[in-house]
Image (cartoon, rainbow, N blue to C red):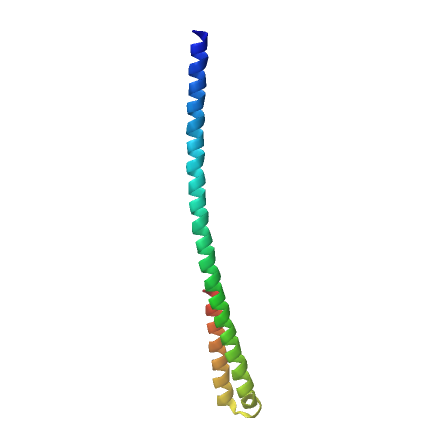
Amino acid sequence: MPDLNKYDMFLEELGSLEKEIYYFLQKGQELVEANKLLNEKINLLERENSELKKKISDIESKLSKISENESHLIVSGNKEEREALKNKISELIERIDYHLRS
């Protein structure tokens, strides 16, 4: 009889271990799936970041071209031309800020 009691305790412990193993396997699968989704999101965000950096670079190059082409207006231009140029520069700065914030 004492052997039967030990055998029952052993089977109960095995059953308990099987439940814990199943639980850990389920958690492991959930973590793998969550990790996969996070990696996909990271890849998406990296692509978006790259696109935004390209847009910023394009805007900066346009701004430098505008400033090079119209720098002579600041020196020789009248007050209206200067104001127009200031407005154009302000718009470009706003666009850069918008792209940086998004």
